[in-house]
Amino acid sequence: MHAQFVDLLMPFLKFVGSNEITEDSRLRDLGLDSMQSIELLFAIEDTFGISLPDEDLTDTTFATAGSLWAAMQRATDQLAAA
Amino acid sequence: MSTALLPVQDGAVLDVPLRQRVERVAAVAAEHAADTDRDAVFPVAALAELRATGLLGLLVPIEYGGLGGGIGDVIDAAIQLGRTDMSVAMIFAMHCQQVAAVVGHAGPRLRAELLPQIAAGAVYLASVTTEAGKGGHLLSAESALAASADELVIDRFAPIVTGGAHADGFLITMRSPDATSPNQVSLVYAHRDQLEITGSGDWQPMGMRASHSLPLRLTGHVPGHQVVGEHGEFPKIAMEVFGPLAHLGWSASWLGTASGALSRVLKLLRGKDGRARFDLGSELLLSRLSRARQRLDAVHALLRHTQHLVTSSADLSTPPNQLLLNALKITASEQCHAAVEDLIDLVGLRHGYLKDSPTRLELALRDLRSAALNYGNDRLHLADGRLALLDPEVRFV
Image (cartoon, rainbow over all chains, first blue to last red; front, side):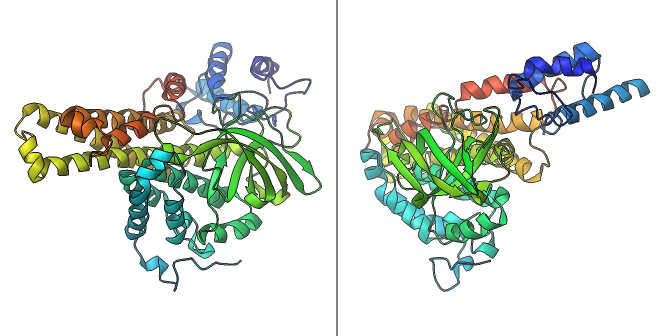
C-alpha cells in the first residue's frame, strides 16, 4: 500500500494506537464508522484524483485497508485505460 | 440433531395455515388488549398463544422442528397482529429478528441446542442491544465480554429491554474479548437460567404500553459456543439481519395498526348507526378517507418492494439499498401515524378521542406516536443525508 494512503487513513482510525496499518487492518474496528466513510472517500478523491465506482461503495470495500486499497487500484487502472 | 415436537400436537402443525395461527394469537390479544394497555403490562396471554401456535418458531427451519417460514411470513403475521395490538405485533416481529440472527449466524452446536427449543415454543428471545450512553447506536459497545478457558463472562446493563421480564433467552451485544476498540462487538446468546437478572424501574409510556420495556442488569457465564457469528462480527449481523428485519417488522406492525384503525372506522361509517350519524356524501369526509387509504397503500407498496430487495439483494450495504431500507422505516412511521390523525379528524371527538370507541383510534394514535422515536427518524435522516451524498447519480433500487 502507498505510504500516502496510510497517512490519509490515520486520522480516521482513532483506535489504531501504536499499531502499524497493514492490508489486514480492519478499518471499522480501528474506528472508521459509516458516517466517516464519506469523508474518507472525499479525501481519497482529492488526494489521488480517482473516484470509486458506485458498485464499490459497500461494506466489503471498506472492510480492511487492503480491500479499500484494492478498490482504489482498480479505479486507478480504469482511469489509465480510459 | 434433535427435532422437538411442536406444542400444537399430532404433527399436523404444518397443515395449519399461517393465517389461522395468527388469528388465534390476535383473538387472545384482542381479549386482553384493553387490560395490558391500561396496566402497562406484558401481554402474557398472547405470548402463551404465540408459543402454543408454533409462531415463535416461524423462522426456524423445518429440520429443527420449526415452521420454516420466511421474511414474507413475518411481515404478513406482523400486519395481521398489528391490526389488533401493536405491542404484540412488535414483540413478535422483534423476536423473529432475533431468531433470524440465530438461524443465519449461530454455529451448528448452538443452532442444534436452541432452535428446537424456539420451535417448541419454549424460548421467547429478547434483544439486549441498547447501552447507556450510546443512544441506541448498535455498532459500538462499552461493556466487554471476558473470556476464560471456554467460557464467556457477561456483565451488562441495558437501559431498555422489551419483554425482558418474560424472555427465556437473550441475544446480547458486548465488546468482544480482547477488543482494542469499542467497535469490536460480539453477539452472545444467554439462556435465562444462565444469568442473574436484576431489573428495576417503572414503565409508564404514552403508548406501546404492553411492550413492557425495562432497564436490566444481566450477569452470568455462558459456554464459548454461544457466541452468534464470529467474535467482532456483530456489524455484519446488524447489516444482514437486524437492520433489515427491524425496519420490515416494525413497518409491518405499524401498517397493521393503521389498517386496523381504518377498517374499524369504515365499518362504523357503513353501519346503520354510522350512516345515520355521518354524511357519507360529505366531500370532506370522502377526501379524508381517501387520504388515509392513500397513505396506507403507499406504505404497503414500499414495504413489499423493500421486502423484495431484502430477499433478493446480495449486498444490502450499498447506499441505494440502505437508503431504501431507511426510507421504509421513516415513511411508515410518519404515514401510519398521519393516517390515524386523518381518521380522528374524520370521525370527531366521540369516536376519535374517547377510549371506549370501538374504533380504538385513541390507542392506535398513542401507539403509533412511538414509531418515529423508535430508532429515531432524526438520526436516520442524518445517516440518509450522508448516504445521499454517496449516490450522486441517484440510482433507485
